[in-house]
Length: 411
Ligand SMILES: Cc1cc2nc3c(=O)[nH]c(=O)nc-3n(C[C@H](O)[C@H](O)[C@H](O)COP(=O)(O)OP(=O)(O)OC[C@H]3O[C@@H](n4cnc5c(N)ncnc54)[C@H](O)[C@@H]3O)c2cc1C
Image (cartoon, rainbow, N blue to C red; front, side):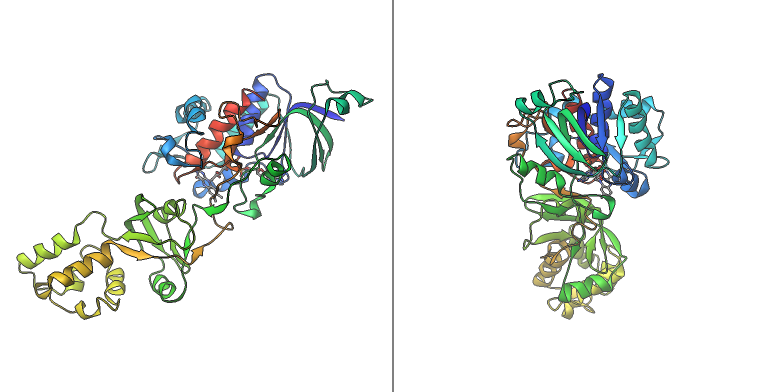
């Protein structure tokens, strides 16, 4: 029987950060992962360049049934702490937009930092190591274990593909089920339930929307067109790029709002976020513009979008109208369609393309200081498996670093 002070299930962002931190405190740490490689999501993140944090991290960038839960960890291990680590390893990085920090070279550089830190902490990492069963040991189990090689502090016994292991602290860092081909699984939720913890509703998030019927045909006719929009749902608005796709809508604006969207709800899109269309139309009228509406609107928007929207039944009559002839009602109708277009997505592309899972292990049952569960001593949950979901833009990795580092102080 092997014994470690701490076993971490999941060699992703949170698990590796926790392992390095605990290892460097002198704890004997084992990280097990059922995948063939560690840190697969890190490797494919940010288009291969890993958007590893954001300059402007705030608790407001995270969703959770308990919005206060993330505050302490984000303060104790902030984006600046992660940047210190990045600087220590002399990694070159740059800001892309909206405070999003990316590697200059490749995402693997971030993984290499974590692995170097794990090595410095003497951490053992085992891949292709599925965990089959976990048993909480009672004091009787540990006392009656005959050939005891471990101290009697062992609280858990794991049956793994590489044999049984005992440990005092068990950390669940298995992430969420998005992109199952990368080794993602719902194992952490099953484990939480096994130990009597609650799991919130789960939904694929930071994910493109899909359409059906006429809306789908509209999106398909514009597939590949990208433009800045502001998009709103449930009192949240994002101003970023939208992309029409063969399935519906994507792009950063859409991924962001998907965090706030529930099936059946409408989203509102303003295709002219930097203009007041009613005012523009009146100015054109006052200036005596002779051009047709479609020509003038094409000054503000891609022509394909203008033509597609002017083909809506309520606007068809206006397509060839000179702008001077537009009535107040026409102007209001145009503003409504271009600046407050409401649509109900048929759904999302689901876990096969989602960047994260919204929801997770209920944080009420977890200490926001140590990440230990309140009801099971020695059992910790960190990272995306928890009910803490960040915006697009490096926030989800920052949550993995913050929660992993904080738990690493206690495991
Ligand atoms: C395509 C893509 C791009 C992304 N880009 C960004 C980005 O640029 N910036 C950002 O902030 N966030 C990004 N994210 C989100 C980010 O990757 C995750 O939020 C983050 O990796 C979560 O860290 P974690 O350690 O909790 O989980 P993960 O990094 O997912 O790690 C979980 C680990 O647990 C292992 N595991 C799962 N089940 C088991 C099991 N049963 N037994 C053993 N091991 C198991 C997995 O193999 C995996 O290695 C992206 C996500 C995706 C899918």
